Image 1 (cartoon, rainbow, N blue to C red):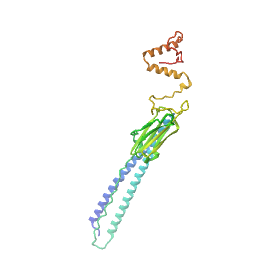
Image 2 (image 1 turned 90 degrees about the vertical axis):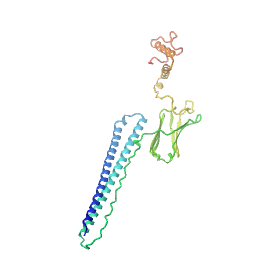
Image 3 (image 1 turned 135 degrees about the vertical axis):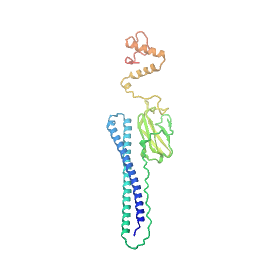
Length: 319
């Protein structure tokens, strides 16, 4: 015989175990749904950015940054999909295990109730339920962290007529980091070094206003055990020697001056504008008189204006 108290105790243990497992399953399903939703958001963002913006961007550097953003969003979306799938599998496995345990317990109870001998039975303690430990899911992504500046970096302009200038970026143990997470993009006027997911941080060193233009084909970066070295190829000047650098960054923001190549007077016009903007009152007065007399056809007739400068093609200047 099976005592009533024994059957009730087994039912209480089984009910408690099932409730705990059901709660864990519900938590896992809720987490999986939320993660899947975040995944779809990031994939949709990547598709919309690519369709709406990428075709309208003309600058190569801007296209590169936009493509990097799209790639990162898609990687993050796929990673979230894998997390959701893993969570669903865990919930399904736990549910299958609970069903199997409940079936075995029911079979044992039935067999005991049908056994007629002996009358006096030894009470067996109920098997303790095995708790299901659900570890918290931590979602990490490099795109959620903003880039930090490197702790420090050093510039070496090199000796005269050397073919390279060098930037040293110390970073302990960087040599052990995944090389696919270290990149450096070069253009004729810039370099962009990015290190992602290194000791839970992402770093970036961008300079798009170099003192001189660089030779992209001779520029490279080298990863050492505790530092990154960027080598920028110098461009040869008018007389065959390499440009001489004194600073890494130009003191003035560069602008592409294609007009000066097509129009020989464009450079003079820019010079005169600079003289007018930065000169004293006398300089501004002389330039103003020169411009007025040039426009009225009086320049050079009475010796006024700025001596020896003539017209210089300044008729179209507007101060």
